[in-house]
Image (cartoon, rainbow, N blue to C red):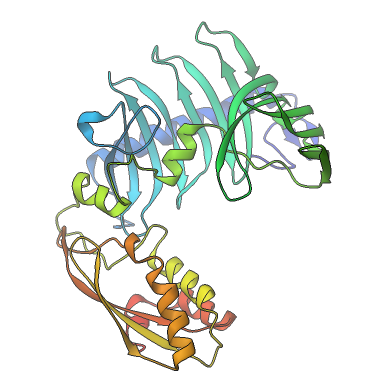
Amino acid sequence: MIGKNKIIFDNGRRHPFGRYFSMMKQWLWVVLLAVGQGLCAQKSDPLDPRVERITLYYDNGWKLTSPEKSVFRREAQFDLVNIWFDGDYQDYDANGNRVGEGFYVKGVRSGFQYEYFPSHQLHTSTEVNGQDFVIWEERTEDGKSTVQAGTGKFTRMYFFTQVGGQWKQGVLEGEFFRGRREGHWLYRSLQGKQTDSEWYRNGRLMVRWHYEGVDSVRLATRTPIVLSSWSLYTDQMSLVETYSSLPVYFQQHVTYPKGFQREVTVMGGWKSWLRKVALEAGLEPSELVVVRLNVDETGMVRDVDLESPYGDEQDKKVLKAVTASMTQFFPAIRNGSPMASVLYVPVSGGVAWQEFIDQSSFSTLQSLR
């Protein structure tokens, strides 16, 4: 566990068997991966009918592509309502060699994530908790360890964002000691330019300097990064240019189970999208506008109309917020097949409205017209 009291510590003190507890914890994740894979191979999770076992295909840059053009494939538990990974996954190369595996919880990588060489040898074992991570094991293909039992220095490529949200690649040099960050962590661009420097003591960030041109600024937070293109593009479900949107990809390459039911949704879930629309519209709590959308069997919106208008100014705000995300819809599913449907989008404002969205059923939200 990442945090103040790790499994290798007892109330802040190093446990004499800490290394063995670390190994036991990793073995527990391996067992859970195997059990989860075995259960899903027999039947989808009966406790959560939204989660199904699906196969996705990727090019050599880990962007979604067609099966015939793929270099990698992923077999994973996937929530077909909220459109995110939720459970275990296994990644394979074109020869059927497992190159990676791990867990997601509601679209977020959680727990141990493993990368393998084509020779089946372990490359990295990384524990992920939110934005934090610990590299417990890192080995070269000839079996040499750079990080062992959470201790060692490493150098690896990473991704970071600049102003405007554009992803850039860099090189990170860092060190772990018994599962905690230690010493000097240096971040550079591919051109060798230093972008950030951090100093750690016993896992605690002591100081961070961020460099921009000739200027530097002292910050109290860690440098936000993504460790690899594998995690960056699979988590975002990035597409090759052949596909105009993720719903189009799913329409062509994902088969829904017989009997599967779903309303119109978006990546991250319909409620998440509804909350975003409300924030962008900026209405007052006393104002309510309902928009009616006719969505076809491909997820495209064929007609937009005001079902319950409020006033010209408010109506324009809501229509602008709604239409900004219309190309991202996944169609309703009935008995495993996509179908056209009518979606009512209620929009209001304030904290109470956000809470109301979270607590309400789909049918309740659809009745507000």
